[in-house]
Image (cartoon, rainbow, N blue to C red; front, side, top):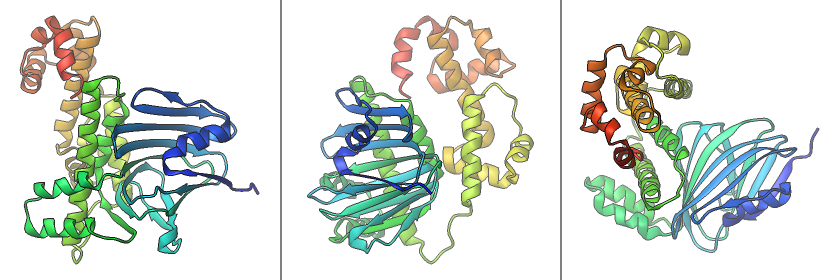
Amino acid sequence: MKTPLIIESKQTGILEALAAYSNEEISRTKNEKMLSYNNQVGKIRIKESVIKKGLVFSHYRVCFNQDTTYKVFTEEKRCFLFAYSVKGQLFHKISSLGNKEEHLDEFQTEILHIKAENILQYHFKEKQPYDFFVICLYDIDLLRSRLKQETSPDGKETFRSFLNKTHTYNYIGSYNLMIADYARRLRHIAITDLSKHLLFEGIVNIIISLKIQQFIEDERNKEKTAGSLNKRECREIHKLSEFIYENPEKQYTVEYLCSISGLAPCKLQEGFKEMHNRTVADFIRNVRVEKAERLISSTDLNISEVVYSIGFASRSYFSKIFKRKYNCSPKFYQKNKSRMAEVNGAI
């Protein structure tokens, strides 16, 4: 039996601790740090993005070759951690909560309020792939400013009581598929210039807002039954979405998607509405149009070739929905693609 691996660091030194243990290098830019390797320790890819002072986004894609405990010594001031897992059930303990082990399911929301000088332990199982993110927020005033945006009196009071807690607190909420969709978008953004920085920050703020909204709704609906999608159904919706993103040109039907996922048609539609705020057909259509925009802006394919490569049979129909989304015809977009791609590339 392998001895569990134990790695310790301060909250702001996670990448450095893993890099030192594995004898690997961290790549750095002005706003981001990246650690990526595949060796005897495991397959590791961690990106840490500093959005502004007091706000850090960390994305973890890890698979350790042995059971691993990561022990984090929190900072000398209180902070909020917003965690979300797309793959793998996260187990963790907090010293001031009696080291009681909690677990965060895939697609569940979690908000941790941690007092200064705590010990937070994450436990990773051998050979288990994990894909999750943690938003660290040290500047509490960034959250207080959101109180003004909350319009309902009971929601404002619920959120205020949450912010004013003085003890360590852990909230694990219900499933939220929409956050997974925003997390997917962040995977494809590198903070290379001001526009990308603002886009990244905007999506992170949306995720924080969705988590706060989920917290308020869960508190409001404590006596009611939880959402009707269970963990397996959430996982299937996520897998289908990724498959369609990667293969938009395929001809999909609701019957086919139900057959490969095991979901009933009503659950399929409910899941896509919850995750993407679109019906299945509208989601597929939107993915195809976005793929077409990328092809027009980055390749020499003519419009007809683009249309057929993404699964549309009618060029006139494609032109109609393209114009509806981008406010110009595909032909105009192609002629002005350098300027238009700069405008739309971050959408």
